[in-house]
Amino acid sequence: MSLEEDNQRLREHLAERDKRLEQQESRLGQQSLLIEQLQAQIASLTQHVKDLQDRLAKDSHNSSLPPSSDRFVRQPKSLRKKSEKPSGGQKGHPGTTLQFSQTPDEVIEHRVSVCASCHDDLRQVEACVTLRRQVVDIPAPRLLVQEHRAEQKLCPRCQQLTQAEFPAGVTAPIQYGPLIGAVAVYLTQQQLLPLERTCEVLRDLLGAHMSEGTVGELIQRTACQLAPVEQQIKAVLQQAAVIHQDETSMSVAGQRCWEHVTSTATLTHYQMHPSRGQEALNAIGIMPGFKGISIHDAWGSYFLYDCAHAFCLVHVLRELVFQAEQQGAVWASELIDLLLLMKQATQDARQQGKHWLDPLEVLDWERALLQVLAEADRLTPRATAPPGTKGRVKQSAARNLLDRLLTHQPAVFCFLEDLRVDFDNNLAERDLRMLKVQQKVSGCFRSPAGAHAFSRIRGYLSTLRKQGLPLLSALQATLAGHPLLPALA
Image (cartoon, rainbow, N blue to C red):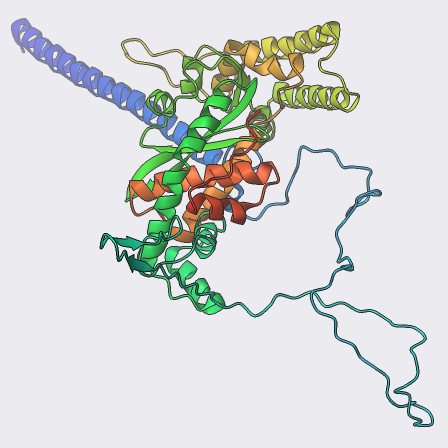
């Protein structure tokens, strides 16, 4: 074989080797790209699994979810320390029991006529002692029909026909009176009975065959009469020193709306609106111009208004419980203990009749809390966006919680610096709780008009209940055109 042939074979061998190397490098590049894609997919799926696990781990004790949403039976764990007091009514608690009436409506005498031993006649013998027993009951309900008759007289002198006037409110040939109307409104708006069941109760108990349309008309009449009262309640709330605010979703004619509540210990205002945010708050009209302290759950729309803010720290505690139990965050456990100690300090001060804590004590509490937050901030770095990505980077729940606490420090410390401010927003949450019951019973409101009427009447009844005023007689007066005005001072 010649030298030229050997060189040719060598060149072909080298060319084939280079080709195989190029193919190998290409496959290695494809494999590397596939590995990177699989690693990114694994990381994404791992994060997704963690998010799902975190969602499953959340319930009413470590998040803002209501108890009705708890998916699994668990042993309740409360942040409240066990009390040394025995269960049940405490010493000095007045209690309630039946009391003897000094003016009974009916007295039934049971006389002795014959001796139980010798059967002698005792009808003329005076009683030694008269024992008393009273039975408290209600008379058999029945409808009271009042017929009003107005005379018409023809004047013999001028031939003018003159008619006597019917009482105010008596406008139809036959109609329901204000008391039975008040009962219908009370059953639907306060006791949350659907219209059909309200008619059933009225029929079974009173024999009144009232239609659903009539009940709906009575509700709208009541709401119309209460419009001026609602405006006065709103005006007083706007000038209040401290208010509680919250909102919850409701279904109105198949659409999602929001029920907003603004309340104090003596006043309640509800309003339904399609929006949850600033548009709704502006339409309600309390927050614009409000200069007091608003206690809420840190919903961002509230911070758009120029007033003082206070967090509901029970919401914060639930989030901290999740971080401590599910994520093992030591700083979260320290914050829980510290917040509960701060809460106890404010409760003790109120019991002692104080209006504020000592400023130096407040400074010590705030310094201790900020130290824990600073350590938590160091241990919980913010997520950074990969190169080339746009938009806001999703942060962890712990990071979001810390950012909220660090950004709104005055709202965290407000309950320490002003003892008028509660540690929680339970007042507003209690005012909303029965509205969720209404949704469970009735499912939804059929129309916006019914939803707005319910909000106005319910706010009025809640205000009366807080002030210890009678609900039924107030509704009766409202249907008669003279609504009872609650105390607004």
